[in-house]
Image (tube, rainbow, N blue to C red; front, side, top):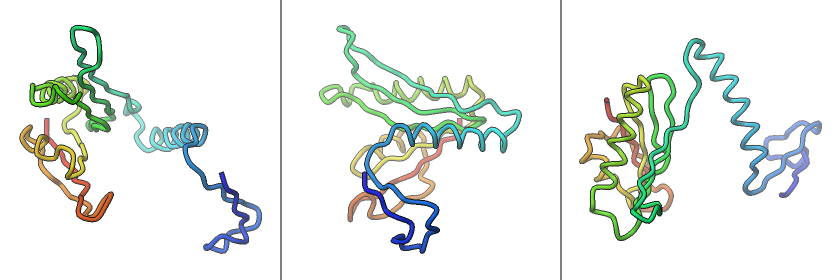
Length: 154
């Protein structure tokens, strides 16, 4: 991790603070999550805190064949990651993951689901499952690709 004294900051930062720029920082991630949870709880009094929601599909040997992870919070659900093992794609595991995720989200009181997919991943899959594109960021993460954002009403 590199340290940058406040006097070298491009923003003309106060000398009382220093910046530390680096890679993965589990402690920082946890602190940020905890602090944002406090802000979110205050802003959404009476709403249960966000909960993780995962779906695993295992083969007969108990090995992971496909998985999905995300969250539910209030009436919204979000899919963070979806993966189907190479060699099993096209066998309906993705649709099964999604159906089970949506059913669990619905049972938690969610009325819609959000997901993003890069154009080199699976935007067509989500469209076939009833998701509609709500916006896209062009040239993300590389020129010629896009980050496509979808929503589906449950």
